[in-house]
Image 1: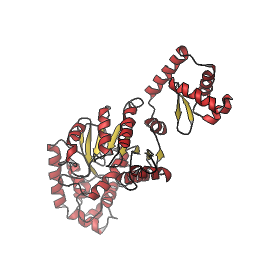
Image 2: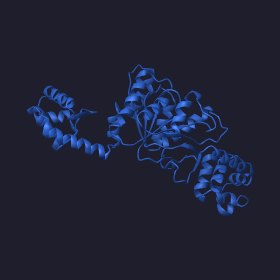
Image 3: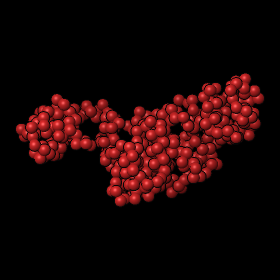
Image 4: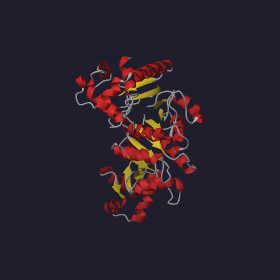
Amino acid sequence: MKEIICTIALTRLYGVSAAQVLELYRIVGSACPIFEHKDDLRSLVPEVSERMAMAVKMSNEALKRAEVEYEFATRHGIQCLTYNDTSYPSRLRECADAPLVLYYKGTAELNQLKVVSIVGTRQNTQYGKDICSKFISTFKDYLSNVLIISGLAYGTDICAHRNAMRNGYDTVGVLAHGLDTLYPATHRKEADEMLLHGGLITEYMSGIHAEKPNFIARNRIIAGMSDATVVIESAAFGGSLVTASLAQGYNRDVFAFPGAVDAQYSQGCNNLIRDNGAMLITNAEDFIHAMKWDDIKVLEKKKTLGIERSFFQEFTPEEQSIVDILSKENDMQINVLSVTSTMPIGKLTAVLFELEMKGVIKQLPGGVCHLLS
């Protein structure tokens, strides 16, 4: 308890930046020793700045506020996840600007094996809604478990949260304010449901309201908690592009769905793809293949289905020749497959179509043919 209160107090020090506080915390390794040496901090950290030493020395109010916040969190079932806590999001801890404390209420495991953030415009179109719905619903055909992160805002965010829960996935909303309030209030129903099927998380203490700079700051948490960020729709400028840029800076994978060149809320995605800021995807399969997230159970199931096809499904001679070639060397580009099979492109396209209808192959981006068995 004391370590948590001291860590919270560090976030309340006056006159020093969050980055400076985090650096001090990393040097010392915990918070309590910093306040135990509040009058002689240089004996603990000789290189500490005069400003930091003075901030720690004058920390009585910060400690009092931290005690109040800890009591509030305890009363309301809120976890105070400090930087060294094993429950703290490990991916976020890797980021240079990670928050020292996170306030979390929910049931989701924040360190699941697969975590993806889904972001986009607050004015999402029907096109974007359909993409988001299909993208997440397709996950269950491939992934046994995945945690979906977004920001609980209007548009793409709430669409992602709703579809995650609809498909049985935990989803966590990253907030730009304390957990004593909710913005937007119209999402209270979803937020309450998320407490049972995911959760709400923030770096802000109670009493801190949703100010514009807070939304930009919280985007780094959305990006940092995730293995990858997917942008569904975005105008030429917007918060989701900030999240994508932050994810890139953290060396995370970024993906974007393209849209019509004259569509207002596809400009940002199209620009990301054009400028190599995101990988183009058109469906969940593209994303899962790029992330190499095909679950072993799913692969075994596909292999079993493939064996059943070989016993019970009949192929034309042309279809069988393509299956035989892909069985030896899978994921072959259509032009190479045409040469290898000595089958003209026109004929080959028709054969591949029939095989895809039979559930034998799947055509991947770039004209690559993949044998599902």
